[in-house]
Length: 229
Ligand code: DX5
Ligand code: ZN
Image 1 (cartoon, rainbow, N blue to C red):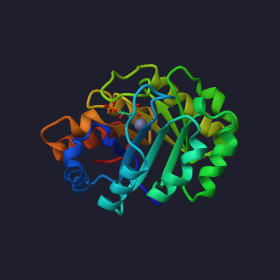
Image 2: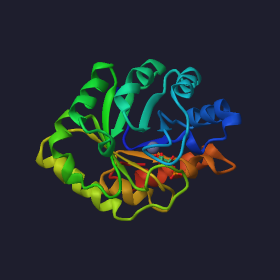
Image 3: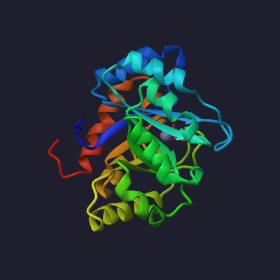
């Protein structure tokens, strides 16, 4: 699958679930290609969100969209098949939740999905070195996972730069994604640092005009890159 980078990935956690279909259509019409699905189990993170049935629903609403499934759960191996069957294109698991991360990443790949690893704000990028050749994407959490609408943790920008450097040094080509507190005030800085995929929940959905907001975010995201707008 080819994407025009940088990609804006709305997180439906912040959507109005009574209008989920309508709000997803608004995103698609505004040019969105990726939809970010946040899965929380009330154990790895304090909150409970939704499971494979909602991912399957999103797949039905948006058959062509790229479904980016972020598992904030314990024992992710137990659920990889369910999320793959539900229509996930990419499944990301937390470094902190996987004692056998290499095996879990292999498991995701064997289910035909792209593979992602996620690190919490207190986890160093350096710890990912051994797994980097095995993954398609690295997701840097820029808030502590569990809730939408939190403030962006500034040190995450430096983590993106560090990861870009590691990607060059190791001659790899994984995508770099950021998640949490992304909005109009920081998106250009993030793309300028080298972020490929920008998850945005509140900044996309907590507004009266979703398409206008997507357009503003996209313009600012592009302004941080050397691409012509
Ligand atoms: C946090 C989730 C995020 C969250 C982003 O645990 O992983 O994807 O929904 O929401 P905002 O953009 O509101 O910080
Ligand atoms: Zn997320």
